[in-house]
Image (cartoon, rainbow over all chains, first blue to last red; front, side):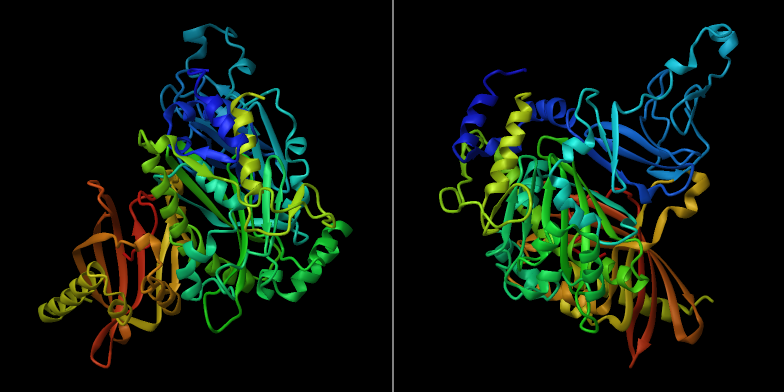
Length: 434
Length: 168
């Protein structure tokens, strides 16, 4: 560790329900995050529906590392480092496509869809016949890959636990996002990408457990009618669940939020699909889960949105990755997800509701990112970086619910910070290598 | 079909007027320039190889894919006192050039313009610069030019601005 004095004061603050503002703009911490967080945890890269056919591929990132996520002719998904084994040039310079193989433009080394080295030009003349064992010089596979409900993840740590074990109890809740219908989710369109001067942790911190901000941050979206909540504090008496690596929030008071605007036939189909404990949760008078975050930087949002007076509000679902580019600089990847087997009109309505609320032009997204950039910019300051932030909401006030059917600790308000405190605890222990 | 010089000048003035309304944050007046049936789209652009360049623009998935009603909701929001992404407002300058006009049937006109959009915020000395080609279809309603359709083709795949709280 470069500076042994960097971590302990932050760890102490977190243990006391506080956080120094400087964590949002600290280049030394950022280097540690790349090594200890992003190279040691499971990172979401793509959804299988983005590469439905043999030869399809997308280029995706884990922090600075570029990967090719491809589907070979046997329908198998591969994740390989996008760097030629000869001089390291990217063999894939585009975001998406379909190909038979990847050919390096520098010296022409050719790799199969699974990364296997197929051809070295002038191999016999330059290296000698059979001197190079092709099996040793394929594109480097990600040390671990895992797929859960069509979601493709990779882990740079060969000794990491399996994806299934990593997700653990989070799967019980992620089911609500991903398992609403027989066919499951598909990506509608492609991910939108853009860059903001804000730290990735602020976004994760918001999605993991910030039910509190909506009444002020998002007042204009509610006032203009895109967010059809009865009031801005629609998450106030909701439920917040904290797992050590996952947090999720539910609404309760607002009837529209109970179904998130999913039409009755889809709600009925969900009841058939979910297990009895999950159905028991739906009968608790809470909404389907809305905001969530899987450590480190995969966030979820499922919510109702209005886009026309001619039709009822529609539910939308987004996955997002907060890709860290530098301390205080993040590339946002925002996917619009929809049930593959839903009618086209439903998909259209869901897409329109998503567009007004999230993604590059979404108004909820705009106001969130404005907050995060206005935190990240001052966090550099000599005095400001040491400023202690209050993370105590709900501590000593709330006890976990004892009638909650799901795993983790559930608290009977979403205006609380248990999931955020769990996020920061997970972050600091991961940085400490524990 | 080409248009007469005087019609060209008239439409050019309309396009400049629109840019002025946007740069002056006169969003309600800007909204009035749109036909009730208008569409306002910005397809997401994805970097593809030259061979698969025809798939570059997502025709069914946009940064914007708006009806006039949706534009109206965005404008209504900008009129509140809590649209934080535009509080304070972005300073924008829409540089519109390379106007080409083609007369269509039904007294509609297809316009092509290049847009260079300068955007500055707060006390930041820097700026975002967004470049795009716009394809518009306009027609006259009760003697007033109105947009029926705009499609914005950005010269970026990963957008280099923190959000689209502005119109292009």
